[in-house]
Length: 247
Ligand code: ADE
Image 1 (cartoon, rainbow, N blue to C red):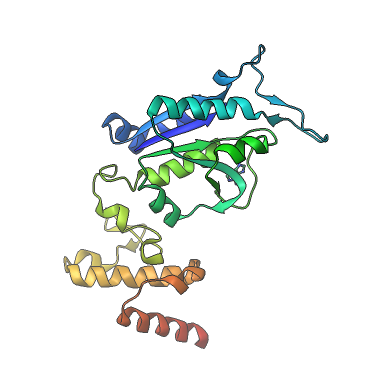
Image 2: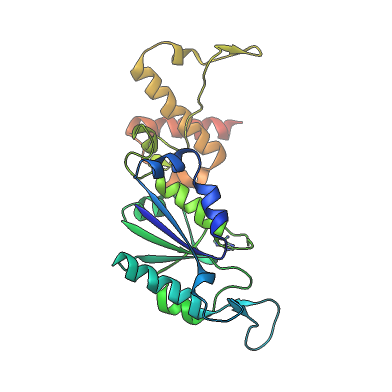
């Protein structure tokens, strides 16, 4: 999978993504990260990429020309016309389902704005998706792009060494992940739940599902509406709800 990031701060994105799991996946040829400096596409003699907004107001607006030129050069170079995701707090809020959907693309372009945003005409010409990482305003689109690239990358086959853990994750079946424990068996007087030491896989699996349900009810009850539960698990959830009502 090939990620292309159109940005004024290519080093920020490259430094952030060329480490750990994503960095290793790049080395192994499973992913490529191509940071394109929008400033390289200005024809302006002082290499400016922004100007004051028409109609007045605070701040500067990124000009349409270098943004469109950077995208078109990329299309020519790759012979493809990938989707362009514009990072904006006005977009649809990115979630695990969006990550899953985007992980099926071969190439993706992330357009990162700065200052007061990008000239609307460039957005009309090249952007296919407006995406946000949440209801707060950041200084630029680089961090959102990095967040999305990380979430998408771990779903690309082979990026995580065991494909199982990409599936058994928070939000799988719309449930939060169960608690995890490792050595030592007792830490500050707190023992590891006994079932995990039993070696009984079926019981362990059942316990983990129950913990996922409990945790989702406690922390993200909004998710339960769309949770995928067996009949037995649904009864378990109803019992939890009933015992809460009794409290
Ligand atoms: N740019 C600035 N804030 C943002 C946000 N919350 N999500 C995506 N892009 C942004």
